[in-house]
Amino acid sequence: MLPDFTTAPGALALVAIGAYLLGSVPFGLVMARLFGLGDLRAIGSGNIGATNVLRTGNKPAALLTLLLDAGKGGIAVLAARAVLGEDAAQLAGFAAFLGHCYPVFLRFRGGKGVATWLGTLWALAWPLGLAVSLSWLAVFALTRISSAAGLGATALSLLWAYMLGDMSSLALLAALGALIFWRHRANISRLLAGEEPRAGRGK
Image (cartoon, rainbow, N blue to C red; front, side, top):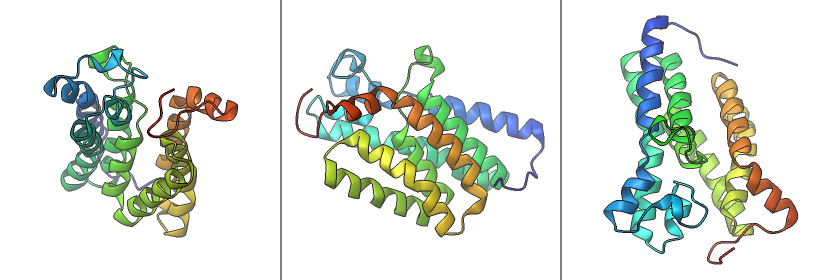
């Protein structure tokens, strides 16, 4: 289901552009350079997200990347909701997510979006964000695989939204979930082959 659309199309277009540009800021690359870690795209998986920053061994840089990437989605949602309304908030969350995954500043080669997705969910409805985050932690505790945790939490997000009565977010969650699974298609192949690395181990 979708939220009621009450915002003018022109305003929604501006929200989408602004949120996309915010989402496009590659905080993983910024943190890697600030901490003297080199070009993150030449390290580990080459991904610009917090998991790859952690592969450098710098936990503060990884934590900052996680918080800033999540903040992109959260800030976009909260700002759009405060100024315009719920329809703008959901569009902002989607646009920020797209910006992270396909950033214009990096020729559309971005991250996989889990942190930005979680930040978006916390801002949309904190009970949903909490439930999904706990799901991530539970799957990670069982598997010690970050990608499996992200995929498991994504798969459960629609169920949690339904159980919590957050029906207006179902369409957004479905769209974001489909993109997360698409961005993780290489991880899914490795998971099926039993080759996906666990936390604390190299490939």
